[in-house]
Image (cartoon, rainbow, N blue to C red; front, side):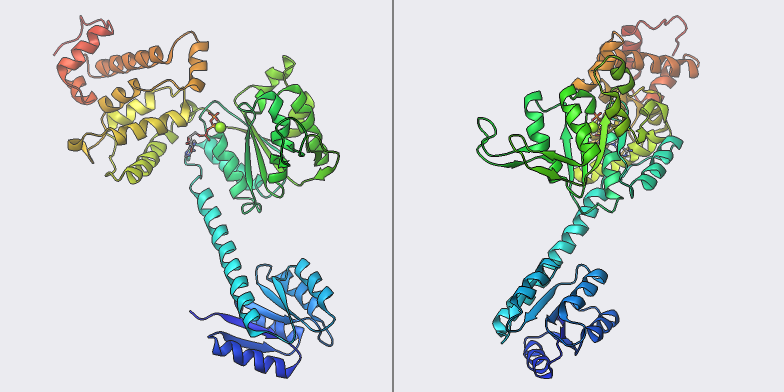
Length: 462
Ligand SMILES: Nc1ncnc2c1ncn2[C@@H]1O[C@H](COP(=O)(O)OP(=O)(O)OP(=O)(O)O)[C@@H](O)[C@H]1O
Ligand SMILES: [Mg+2]
């Protein structure tokens, strides 16, 4: 497809010679004899690039450039500077022109600049589209009342700069909420920078957040920009904020108040404009009471609170999420999607999900990967799910709540399985065959389970 260019120059001879040369090179060319005429032409038909003369009577090139950039910030503009206007050309580049060429024009240089400016613009457009795509993949699934509330809150809060604090148990989707806030904000094409406050050793966290000057400490051989620097204009996601030391909390508080800071070992004050989104699975009010978290920082961060409820408190989301993950992993592993039997759905519904959405996601991935050849595309039964739930390797982060209540995750799952079998048996009036077929297991297998769980079998019958 041929490229188009608009030439804005008051000199007829330049318009004609440059226009002719560019046409010969395959460009579609429009011409305008003044800034005003040029802007009008742009409104009628947006070209791929503009060649703009600096010195024109009336509205000059710089003024035209300003108006043009105000309306079409992404449109690449190459300035044409006459003798004695180089300084102005440099100013034009600062105002957003791509570059400039001096008159008399070298066609070769004009062609290179046009080509480069158009490619740069296309790259940046692609980049933006990709960023949108990346974030789109990360949208929150779920239509339960609490999720609907969270989604509407995200839409209302995203366009603002207010600090956000997201709380919720492990694996509930706090990080996803943070991503969504960024993706739906006007900052979507600026950086989203993540800091895991729990993972960074205390003595390194300052350098990580604020950066350090060369020679600030042993091993600091180069200037390093910190996360606040890198997030400038975008969003900084402070994850696991409850695990930050009091000293670092004080520094963060100052940045939030003043939007400026110094690098470690530096004296220069750096100003940044950053939207802060923080997350934690701790109860910060309790941490404040224990003296582990600064109350003033809490109120700074908690301008807009998000509370993501555990999965067991929004059971409507379970089947939708299960389907969603089934689709995702089937596609990723090139396998046919499997529906869930009604009993399979009951297992998902009754299970307490101590690891929340992450645990559900892992379970479905395991089901997809471990589907035997002869069951491809077949419905997922209660037995399949109970089987795979048993295999769940207790991730360290979900061990804590289980241990807190004095049980291991394994025990919790066993207990669940026992409950579930017991309930189905009761529903089926203690008919083992029927229960086995509903659960999708062999009758003998169910008998063994009943025995191993010590379920009172006097009532059970075949
Ligand atoms: N509503 C949702 N829709 C789709 N995927 C979700 C949803 N909630 C969570 N997930 C997925 O579950 C996993 C865990 O979510 P996420 O990492 O956001 O949780 P978290 O609350 O930050 O957990 P942690 O406290 O352990 O850091 C991720 O893979 C995420 O994509
Ligand atoms: Mg997280």
